[in-house]
Image (tube, rainbow, N blue to C red; front, side, top):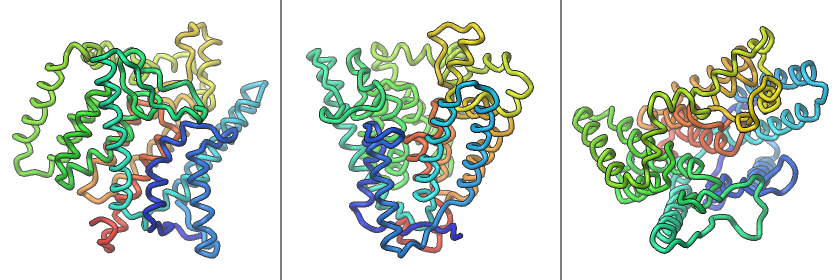
Length: 386
């Protein structure tokens, strides 16, 4: 079983990869969005053109297989109704099948991925500018959904109260998409692109986006001999930007306070749930996406009874210490395989995993695609990194 990657060369292929996070917002079949359908078709075409010589990401396959087994066993043993368990495991299976193929990455052309995603990112950012300007200067709401397609979840509504989402469900999802492209534009010294994307991250009003706009340049500049000066300048400029548009961002300052971080379910607020865990729950968790019913059973109000936490905490809630550590070790192990110049891509994954729930969804697949695109296995083949 080969673990080296499929060879992706067509610009059309990279454009399809670039738009799949957006198209994954719309349904096709149960457990299969339009975006996932696009990726599946790419995988099948790759099989046929390579005469069914199949290449996969073996480490990711092993990791996901263990988590699927834990989820299935916990669900069958813990809950009378196993329908949700089977549906959740099936969702993990679909994600795993796609991820182990598309993230077997030693032949993903980084520059073609970047160029395709840059086009989509700039288009999304210009549309976000339009949403922002029309809302704040004329009171007009411009929705970002594709009218003739059916969204899988409720979304796109944040713009109705002033938070631009572009083509995504919410501002945070826009920021996740933009972050790797923004980082690459700085690395490649394409500063006009960097400025536009940074402006989009700030105007999105997403806390994740604002943090990314400031911290990504700082991470990249750690390699500079003038790191301290550059970092101070970057932080000061970022601070001035935020202060200058304070009337739109007062909530941001509240969100990053110590008390807010401790109570926010996106950060540390869900740690309180562990006090209700039994010894078996601590070891193997309560199952993927079973948090809502678990909280209702322990007296939490409906408003708190949601399947949401940051990705790392959610992995421990869902799969216990055993499964959570397996996922943590897997993601941390990615660091050593990334070229030094592109380590910032790893830190984007870590920051997002600590602030958003991306487990086994389109956002995680998108970030993993970038992680494997900057893999050190391409160091001997300059055409993939230049």
